[in-house]
Image 1 (cartoon, rainbow, N blue to C red):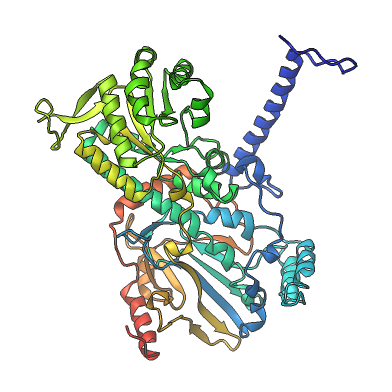
Image 2: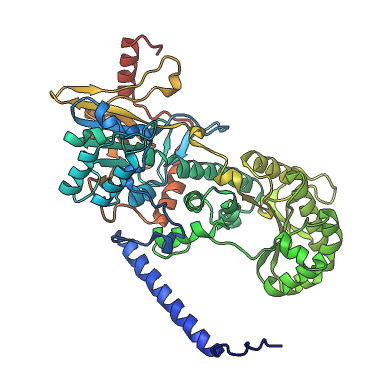
Length: 570
């Protein structure tokens, strides 16, 4: 029965009027998004670009004058007088737990567009003044480069006066390859490392992209063993991002979720999918998902069978997932699944069973066996050496009929490998299993995961004397930095980047890899669309064998010479 308005209340608008108003609002929003997508595709978001509209996130309200570590506010006074300073950022160690020193570089566009390229105004300096005057111990004044800030606001139209070179987004390289180089000149040399804090944060999306890629190798290997070649396109769907709710902020979810989408197309982190589609890819979709129940849905019905029948009625003609352990996983597989089998078959879609507790490997195998028992299976063309039943021996791996399993609880790289091995040993094809990774994908890593650091590497003093700068702690060889101006190049298309001293003649025979992404002001159109970046990752990862050394003999000679001169072990 309809609810009547209370006496004296304003008349309720007709439903048709409400619908028309909603249509107008939707049309306006679509027009805004389309206009933004067109501008972004041309490489110009414009001043005042509303990030929250396209990215679904909001940057903290803080001026760029405080977007650094406290001690960096004092360094302009501590550096010697000079004409030029350069610093670079690098990964120094393999991804923790991996026997592979490759990494995928990703995320520089975000930090350049949203922070480095932000135009400063006098208000930024005024805000800094208000903050720094009580930031020192005892809430006393803290030094900061007020005069330099005001100078570049007046002389450089408010843009931070440095040059940033970086690897192209999606570059695959070996650790110790410089990811970016910052150079500042003349009186602004003292600001060279002011942006280190922000740019060093590129470690996070790069680590997510690298981990996701390592998982793709696991899945690819499993497909090559147990999946028919015509289905290899399904590799793209086999690692699903479940990490949104486990992130510390929406910004983290967007950055990490975007990095994952370089390798796979499955994601429930819609903020990342939206950001990539409309901000990075000209409106072309990149990530997708399927309808699925959660425990709240399953327990809202009086029985799991009712919940499943409702889902089948709604979505049963396509792929859909259902969580199966709200009460008793074994009972759901042995009693509820057979009860809804006919309804599922009648619809003709793909039911994806999701265990969410217990031992991940055991629960996946249980789900596969239950799916085979209820819906049957076929055998593919890949001969399976693991069959033990006489009727299976000599046949291919089993592929369930219109049924699969997704494991999203307790998933990490190691568990995925264990599950895939167990799936094969049980005689099933890897096509039957998908993984959802949450915290392990977007949250369980830090800057030490690959030991990212930014260090000064070259200086020209006020008298014109040049010096290669190199950190050489005798207590930790892992923290030694690279000296001098550096050139990152390739010997041929598809070859891994190598690093040479910038003035070495051999540089002329190499193709440069780094590009200037910020030249004392934004460079319109410098970044490629997401499809191109994803293609680069796929191409370069396959062409770059594990555990290479990017340091050229020429640069290594310079490193060794400095180490020997300081009494360090080479």
